[in-house]
Length: 141
Image 1 (cartoon, rainbow, N blue to C red):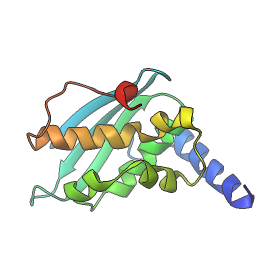
Image 2 (cartoon, one colour; image 1 turned 90 degrees about the horizontal axis):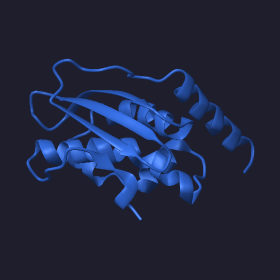
Image 3 (cartoon, helix red, strand yellow; image 1 turned 90 degrees about the vertical axis):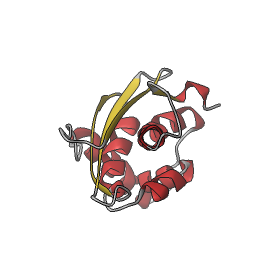
Image 4 (cartoon, rainbow, N blue to C red; image 1 turned 180 degrees about the vertical axis):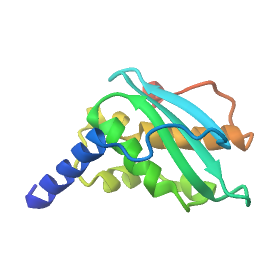
């Protein structure tokens, strides 16, 4: 990895130390929580949909955990604004690792994708496609 990866590492640290969209949305369309038990990461995502009930108007998150999980949640909260629930559902591990811009070790992938999984599961619960209380990365092997 060259100079570019240092820039991305700095970006991850910046999002970790100065998270964007940290907090809550009082009139959120849906709120969902999740955890990565292996690392101790916890994320709560609030999503507010536009009047069309499909386009994401705002995202906020709260949580605690490692730099990768918290930076990923911060970056994702900005990326999701303006996307549709369908576009959210199409996101995968590659989407998140590309957003982070650095190679993520296999042990840290669950940290990186936690916020994405929480947002996706929350959408599926909202749409009546899933019925779970909490997302966990424990079953993602």
